Length: 188
Image 1 (cartoon, rainbow, N blue to C red):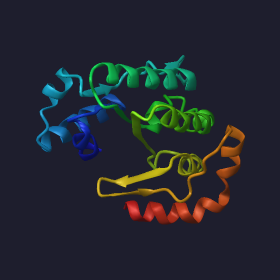
Image 2 (cartoon, one colour):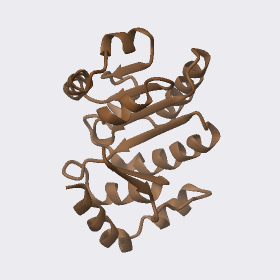
Image 3 (cartoon, rainbow, N blue to C red):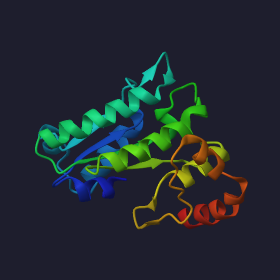
């Protein structure tokens, strides 16, 4: 993820949302790639988020997260950046309860926000070892692009442009399991 962030820092505000340990790890990776982390933080190009303000009583709140991202895009533009690149670990974002029932709604609304706010881009990180298979499958149909690792990303042939949440739910079908297995094998 450090390479993806480093590539964008010149013109785009980059927001990384994850646990304190993962934020510290990314900071180290950025330093290792030659990024002046303190400088980028100081000028507002890099935003590292390790708090849980997007949770309500320890539970993921879709509205709060979408509102936070929408405001962050506007703030980035007002500060003179070309846009906002946001990335977060879906396991961490959903809080200690790991309440994933809102995942599909969030991903659908986030994709809508990507269309409404062209200055917003991002990567939702799905760790196959930490999330249920169904959650990873739902993520697969939710976004037009796939970022597999720092060297492999591609257009997502399994993406379903859905006009409603119900339409998205029907898209996350078991037939995607074979495709998901192939993608996960590429990521190793």
